[in-house]
Length: 470
Image (cartoon, rainbow, N blue to C red; front, side):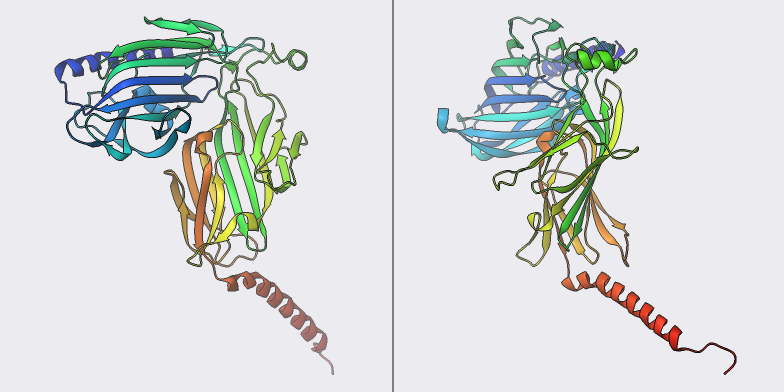
């Protein structure tokens, strides 16, 4: 209840601050949005917001930068922002991805609003228009209400937002579609004109810049609120033909907390009505040609897993279905480890400047997961120098050293970190490094030298007479 009150107070303060700013100053704006459509997908705990904006240059000079504004509550839970320009008409449309960067406006209203600049591929002349498609993803935004539910109860959540699109530009016409996972909507703030059709609620309005109108939707959402609090993925490269991957998971059900006792009999017999918001199976997509797969926790090996692979070349991944030792309800946690091996030739290549590079997927193999803290450690072979990672989005990175058997100077470890990771971030990354083949013989020569010295010591011991008398 306190969280609901704080959210309403924040929206109200934002509303009055914006009214004060609009009344006190009206800075000139280069663009006008003739039509805006926003689709908010609340089907899971990961909220996808799609914006379609038809932008017109109402100024006298060409312009190539469009500013996108987000509310303070969205900024606190923002995972990613992506934009593209649509060219063509009907079936012959093409999408051109655009660069998006955070920015600050000197004449911004006195509120903590986050701004992003979308850089157009070509400047928009006066009187011309273009269509932009923007996708931004927010997490940990839905508020379970009630905060605790019994095993037989469904999960209800609150969604707080503004019915109007927050924008520094004048929007002539706009429509917002809010899609819920089911038709069971307990309540929502009705704003005229508002229409509810099935699982969609769509307010429509025409307002000047920086217009907002707080709304809330209280609805049923029994989708699994599976969140990985921390994932540490270690990728160890061996030039002898194998890559070993080890993944350490700390999983939690971030939905409404479970109260009361747990009845496994009721859960097994009537899972659709008992524990509807819980989950017991997880699906991981692993790379193709995976081998030596294991799944265990602190107790030991867990046998409730199934791996599906395909020998066809067209098959692009392997599927691993795992089942924790117990179903997860709201607030329950589980820790486990997944490990597997991969052939080296599928992921390690040579560049034109005689460097070697690893091409691997930056992401979480578990489908539909939010990862609060993702850490990827790439363990390079001993003797590697000049490591440099290439990631398509900003990450934290630093170097470490790891020592294993027969290591002398240690192995260089490239550590990459990303917070608030969502499935849309899944993409390939590369780690470039230099390596001299002579270092591959270091461990072999070390073993050979050790055995040679042992044999020499044995021969010397046999032939030396250590007796006192002749």
